[in-house]
Image (tube, rainbow, N blue to C red):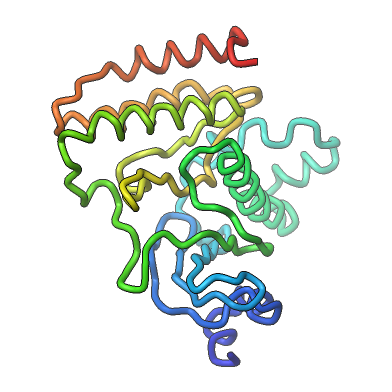
Length: 247
């Protein structure tokens, strides 16, 4: 245990509280974090869990941070907003914490809404512990590396669009959706990586991000002979959302 907590100090609290017992292997390394497959502990009651360790903000890869952060401080008092937007140590720490908290809350919201995302389990200031997708032989593959049964491709496409619509109905746009952060497991598509998800009630970039998400999805499914217009789909969803058809 000591060796694990020395190599991964971010996991020490989760180990001490019995959520995990060991780090088995790396799952994915991205712009903002690295995910690992871990052995579950008695507190989690699971054999395997996934731990997403966020990098320190200064080591993160988001170049257009403000595109995603816009609107996140709505409702904060002036002092907190000024600190958040500053380059000070306190401001950077507030920005760092906001990504972890935001992704965890978004995962919880999306899971409770019945969409296909990993179930969040718990979090610390810089780690999110969530459902592991895969088995003892390895993790679920990303969609870009999978060849779907052509007879089922449209079903998967429509279910994914339904998830996008449900997220929007619950005031979320993924913001970075592509075949690289959709996993294929048990004949379902499961979307991961929500730190950059935006709230369309406060973020002015939400529609453009929604349209980009849909363009990535539609482009991928063209290989199965599915030709859809992402701009038209985005406009239809946006109109229904803005005019309160789902309220």
